[in-house]
Amino acid sequence: QVHLVESGGGVVQPGKSLRLSCAASGFTFSSYSMHWVRQAPGKGLEWVALTSYDGTHKYYADSVKGRFTVSRDNSKNTLYLQMNSLRSEDTAVYYCATLRAGPADCWGQGTLVTVSS
Amino acid sequence: DIQLTQSPSSLSASVGDRITIACRASQSISIYLNWYQQKPGKAPKLLIYAASSLQSGVPSRFSGSGSATDFTLTINSLQPEDFATYYCQQTYNTPPTFGQGTKLAIK
Image 1 (cartoon, rainbow over the protein chains, first blue to last red):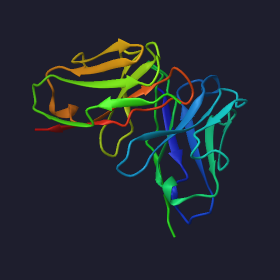
Image 2: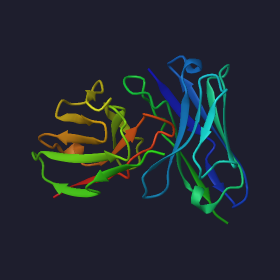
Image 3: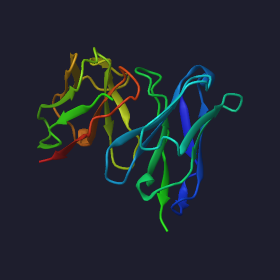
Image 4: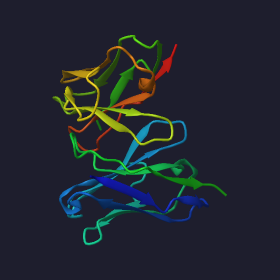
């Protein structure tokens, strides 16, 4: 059974950094591209970042480009999101997801990041 | 980036009703369109993929149709557990954008 668990969220001051993790199980993690999607309080879903299955290709939303870095460790079945220079508008629940059409689609439960002084 | 526009943004309906939600893409995306359901405090759940394929375990009262730029999600005979927010999403190219969402409320 495909399973994703995010961790690392919390309250952080503007301008500071935070690293999120996503532990995967139940599937061949190293074969899947992986995504981060976020949802600000009361708002819709916003795609944030994508890494290819082997980590060689990465893509970012314009809103986080240059500040966030997605990475993965296939030996640990773990996805990461390094978030630097955080802003109040980055406050959201962050989900990791496979975004695979069909049975392999899976989302974690989400981790809340609050950027506030 | 491909823009997805859902309509309506919200609607009210009663148990047993049939409803439709539309999603329009800013350019042709073939059938690379998925539909998600999200309940408060929960992660989104895939309902329909490739425009019209029902995800395993999803009740048959949910159906999807369309291609190119115009897509529809239909829910027949609404059940109490269907009241939620629905999002369309395209995977035709990167970034995989979402519609703004449609909130379905009980009348």
